[in-house]
Amino acid sequence: MIKAVKKDTGNVIYMRLKKHNCPVCDKQMKVVRMSKVVKAKTKEAVGFDFKACDLPLGEKVKFVWYEFKCKDCGKQYTEADMRRHDKLVRREAAAQKRAEKRAARAEEKEAKKVENNG
Image 1 (cartoon, rainbow, N blue to C red):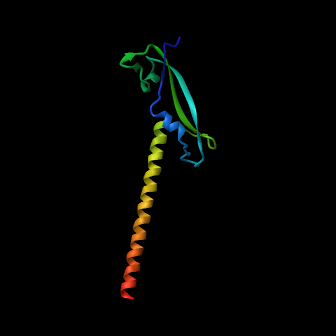
Image 2 (cartoon, one colour):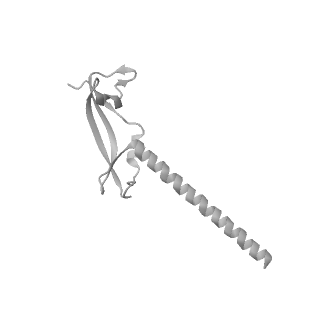
């Protein structure tokens, strides 16, 4: 018999509402509800937290969390993986924008030099 159910909500509302693209094939991903019943004193229990509000939940607990699954290639990612990927994409976009601005400034400087010398 399951003693308790523990849901990992984190910042899941934002993560579920936002559209995510697969890091491999760049297709849109869907949210998948995952769950697993784990006994407290087994090897697989190492990755799970058996406390809520600093109180033990019991011997058998059902853990519920959400992951992202690619509709095209079938790969599945955790919320943490998607956060890392989103952060990397934002950093790359910002770096590209900075590089474009630097190039535009360099072109302006070169154009002014040619104007002043000519």
